[in-house]
Length: 279
Ligand code: OAD
Image 1: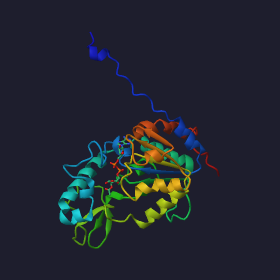
Image 2: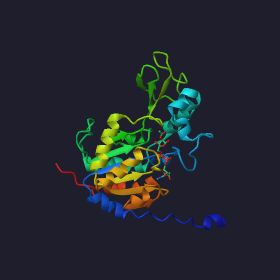
Image 3: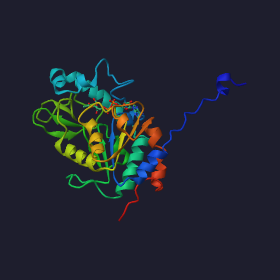
Image 4: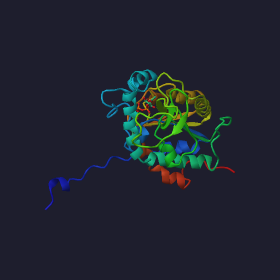
């Protein structure tokens, strides 16, 4: 005997059509990608906005600021400690891996150009501080908002890598005994110069600009696809929800990043999608 619930077949979610994306990827010689928190959502990392985006009653704009840290470092550190705990457990998902595969396809063994003097065939710009792109194998990654695993001294500026969860002592202290802060960019702070220079160069020279899982509400990162478009890039957006960039995109795919990009990974690996590298 089977319960009626067991007999009912659950309707499969219709597969997302990616043939237009595949064609655009195949005709481009260079690709720039901008990712946001949505790409890590399927790894279990909460986004900032939308469902599950709030930590306690706080919005990120209230906590991720130098003023909030100066006023109440413990609360700000508790938020980052909570995020470090979640990120520490997370694994890259199929979208992260597909982008790493795409880089391999476009750039081959060519390494990134840290000086930012040359246009790259593939550049990944991320607002995420979780490091999941690098863990999936992406190499030419420009972290616009820093790295949650770096700590920086509020007094002497010394930096160190610290992957420990939980942090001990908490909040962390520098060797000079001053308070450390997370090595991330906060609202009201400028993006690191070198990262921004390389990001604008990549955005301004790419033929295809892929925007994945960002609400495109935080500047200056949100302007990078516009810079790309002004310089002739074709924009493709992958997001669960519409964003201010959706109307400007030539192709706007409504779906989860891993569900859209994941199935492309094998095709990219087999050379069915993407630029054929030249020697
Ligand atoms: P947001 O949280 O603002 O936006 C995440 C976007 O991803 C939303 O548009 C969601 O609809 C979409 N989304 C959610 N799940 C998805 C999935 N599985 N696949 C595809 N899309 C999905 O995150 P960001 O745009 O990255 O900065 O936010 C930008 C910056 O604001 C962050 O870097 C952070 C934050 O405050 C600082 O802390 C300085």
